[in-house]
Length: 236
Ligand code: CA
Image 1 (cartoon, protein in one colour):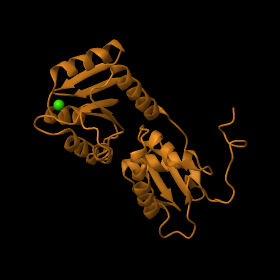
Image 2: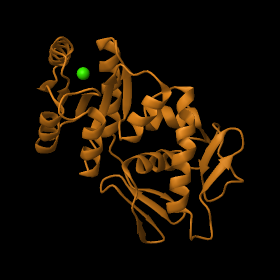
Image 3: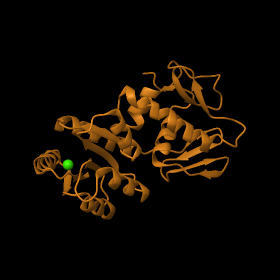
Image 4: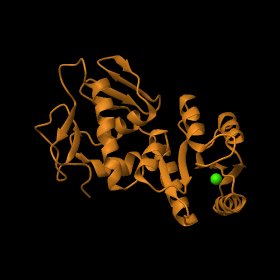
């Protein structure tokens, strides 16, 4: 696994490089945003640890450019900013996770490993009614018509489809799609659900995305017939 660390504070940068190398990752370091963007564009990394405040190019601008260029590399933002609005800004820029400084390396490592594991989950095509998602090709079609989704919309739809016929709560979505568990962020879920509805359901007679009042959301062709844990795949 190859990790890129974009961090300008020498002490933190060194401890991150040493920490990841001790865990048998190969770790590269960029000390400013421009160099970070260049490396992230030229080399395929499995994950990126990205400081927000950086010389030359700040972390969020870097991340936006990276996502605009089509990169789906898992990115964890490190920042001293702990406000909800900052976390939301980080996630909206395309981050997969957000960790506030000061942090423990063990926590950062655990979170990065979770992100990388999720990225590796290979799988077969997902189908609900006439909606088809192909995780290999990263494509979505409804009734044979290709639908263009942002990286985050795609991740949300994939999660809903993996849990088709079952209600998922906002907290579950935040935890699985953003790898965060934090009440203040659940309003972001509603925003992304509305984006998805506009792309997936608008213009089709059968809506697939449903709101379970007071609980969350469900993707289903037959919403009256919700799966329960008893007949669901979660049963042990
Ligand atoms: Ca910094």
